[in-house]
Length: 360
Image 1 (cartoon, helix red, strand yellow):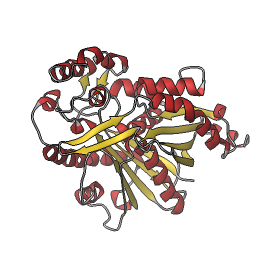
Image 2 (cartoon, helix red, strand yellow):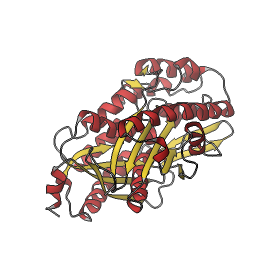
Image 3 (cartoon, helix red, strand yellow):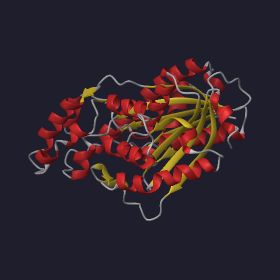
C-alpha cells in the first residue's frame, strides 16, 4: 500500500501575534465598517495566538492592486515551495530526479503555466514528470491532495509522488471590502506551505504511515456556504455562519459510513488529523462526534500557533503527528471545503493498525 515517506512545513518569517492583527484590523475597518467595534471580539474568540504571514503586518495596510498581490503570490509560492520540497526530499532520502508525479494544491492565487511548471523549471525536476495542478478546493484541498497522491501511488507501485500545498490567504485581503465576511476572515486566515512525499508499494517503508482509503462528498444545494466572489479588486471571501451547524448535521454520519466500508468503527480511530477551520468548527466536531478527552489537541495547537492556512493546515497537523509521535492504530484526516464538501483519508499509523484490521 502507498505510504507517507516525509512531510515538511514552512514557518514564515513574519509570524504575527493575534493581538497585533486585531489592533490593525480595528484601525483599518473602523472608519467604514460600523460593526467593527461590536465584532472585534471575534479575534479573541478564535483561540488563535499567532498567525503565519508571508509579509510583515505593515504590508497589508499599504495600497496595492490585485495584479500586484497575485504577482507576489507567484514569486513567494515558488520560493517557499522550493524550500519545503528540498527539506522534504532530504527527510525522505529521495533524489529529485526520481520524483514521478507532482500535485500542486492551492486556492489563493492564479498562475498559467501552473505553479507546478514553475517548480519543475526552478528545481530542474524530470521533464517527463506527471503534473496534476489542483485549484479551487479551498480548505478541503490538503486532504483531497493527499487522497489523489495516494491514488497515483496505488496505480504505480514504483511512484514517488510529490504533493505541495500553498495558500497565501493574507494576499487575498481586499482592504476596501467592508463586509462582515471579510472582517471575520481577517481574524482567521493565514499563510502556509507544505510538501509531502508519498511512495508506492515497491519502496521500503520505514515511516509506517500507510494509506488505506479515501472519501470525497459534495453536499447538494450548498454552493453558497463557502467560496470566492471574483471581483475587479480580487478574491472576495464568502463563508456562512452556518458551517458549524452543517457539521453537526452531517459529519458523524459521513465518518461512520466511510469507516464502515473499511470494516471499522469510530472507536478504532486513534489519531484525528482534522483541518482546524476555527474554534467554532472544532467545537462542532467535538459535539458531533461525542468523543471524550482532548482528541483534537494537536489540531488545536496548530490552529493556535498558525491560524487557518486553508488547504495547507491539515498537512501541518499531519507533520506535527509524525514529528511529535502518534498513537499506533488508525488515523483519520478530515477537512471541509467549498462546494460544500468533505474530504477524508484513512491512514494506518504504526503497528496497532494491523491488529485493528482483525476487527473488520
